Amino acid sequence: MVLELKAAMAYFLAKSDPQTYSAEDFARDKRTVWDGVTNAQALQAIRAMRPGDRVFIYHSQGESAIVALAKVISEPRPDPANAKSWVVEMQFVLKISPPATLAEVKSSGLFADWALVRQSRLSTMAAPESFVSWMRTRYPSLKL
Image 1: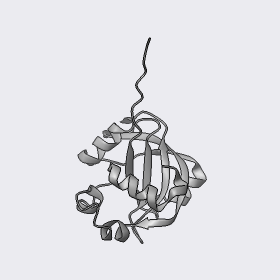
Image 2 (image 1 turned 45 degrees about the horizontal axis):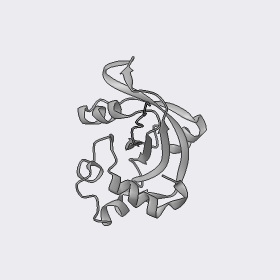
Image 3 (image 1 turned 180 degrees about the horizontal axis):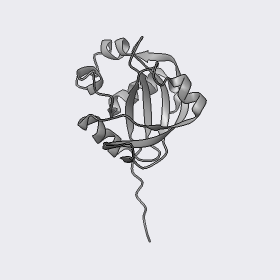
């Protein structure tokens, strides 16, 4: 008998400036190659992504907030345009309404040790299970 072990789905957060590439752009395009990441710590998150993982899309300008959910649909690979970077393909899943604002995340007091709160400049990061649980409670219809 052969048992297949399926890795648990992981969750990440990826930031985008909505003036550069918004959740609306992503919804229209339906899928995108997530590129432009050069920070070493953010690249670790990109390289850890696997098909089926979920990614919270965060608008980093204006009202800083988690605005959408995406699904990773490719293995990470080196960026052909930048030897120091990696890319991953994502598919748009849904818009999160109302958005979960950074102010709400911070005021919850639950995520003081998360990079979203501690390292505001980090563009891509793993999302802790405690955050995913918090989002499940706030947005039960998301079926996270």
